[in-house]
Length: 152
Image (cartoon, rainbow, N blue to C red):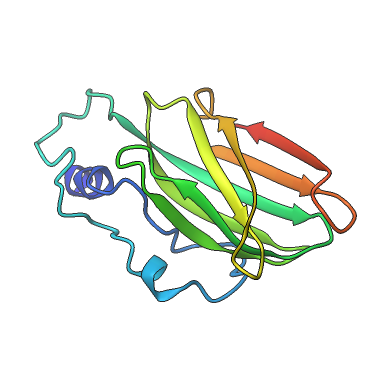
């Protein structure tokens, strides 16, 4: 059973967390259809218990304390280079997202979109040292004035 769960986790690059702390908005249907188990069979071969997975489960926490709503927070999926829409983050709310992250990828590339759908800001966060959690905190007074990053 342990190997089956491990293989299922390995076959998806990003997966939506079933235990989000707080749902901040209705996620667009195309995001909800993001594969929990993909057809690419990454890591589908049998793996012994002593082999280190090329992926690590990583939790992303996006905290919006800037006084303005984020229409959408997105991240670049590191294997395909495709943008994945993670969800809207209203002011004062937190978006939690769980993903299987390739251990060899050093940076998380992200973007924030306005409620009107325009690109507001994009950036990169160094995640190589993250064991399980990356927290991005956006602070300001009506706009993003400070970005704090924390990896655990």
